[in-house]
Length: 186
Image (cartoon, rainbow, N blue to C red; front, side, top):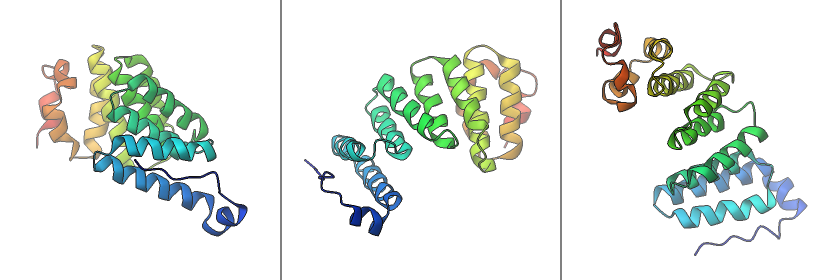
């Protein structure tokens, strides 16, 4: 079992290493643990860190990833929501909040969270990913016209997404729509 005691943090540690560097290191360690299927250790690391850095959107977002991996999506929504509230101008917590809602089949909330991600200034690749997710959520709701608009936006700007679109079952309701085949052509 992995345990790091954060109760002994001093002002010197915070000043010397910087709070952000400390949080970044914790997140990286948790990501490595997740990648090595040490989910319980990653969760323990993040929960211990949150006892000290409870206002860190990065730690809450990482907890959301861990809980998603455990398929505890209700708790993941809570973690991503906390991350989004702490870092409302951060793209990724909003996007992953949308994905967690999608896993709970709450597509209206998934759409709202992902639309919040679109409002954040970030690079075009991330915006294309958000547009693609919105296309999926709308398609699952049978809102094919809206889904095609989002899909067109995502695919016009990122050819790498076309392969996903050809295989993604979330888009099945769009396969007979005029223009779908043209959009996803390689």
